[in-house]
Image 1 (cartoon, rainbow, N blue to C red):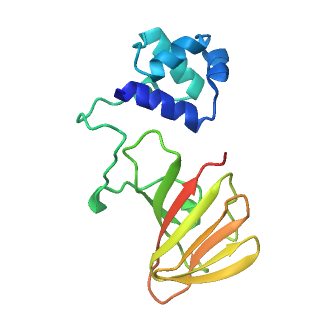
Image 2 (cartoon, rainbow, N blue to C red; image 1 turned 90 degrees about the horizontal axis):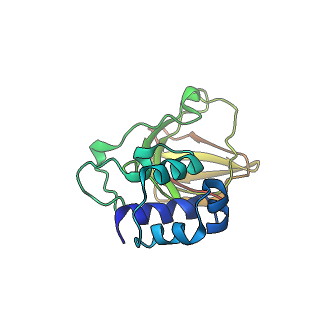
Length: 186
């Protein structure tokens, strides 16, 4: 399977489209879409444009950036290569770093969060669709999920439905660092 066919199949799964639904969105036949995903056919530029529009992404995201030659099936991000994420909550003291930023199509969103202290954080919580796993790498945090507080230290973890209102703050003496893996809902 070549890189474009892999990406097409992954995007369809990520968006939870059937071949029929994608066919309706693009005007392309189900059999042609299937051939693209199996690398039996190569897409024309007009096909790429239709697919990018159906997924709400740019053409370069769909066909790949062409940098390096590494397959996006594997994404290695070194500690010094983590990119700051511009996520909701930044203005409330939360700082985030991407852990799989090089991979364009993903079913999970792993990142490191540096939660603020209670006096630096907004009283807001962040409910969203999906599930979330948090693993405390450093420090002590208090996570409130669905109104219930959980104090976690380094090595502790929590897994919950992200639709429950949740908020994470640092409560120990030092700073805290938490690995978060958010999965999109099905």
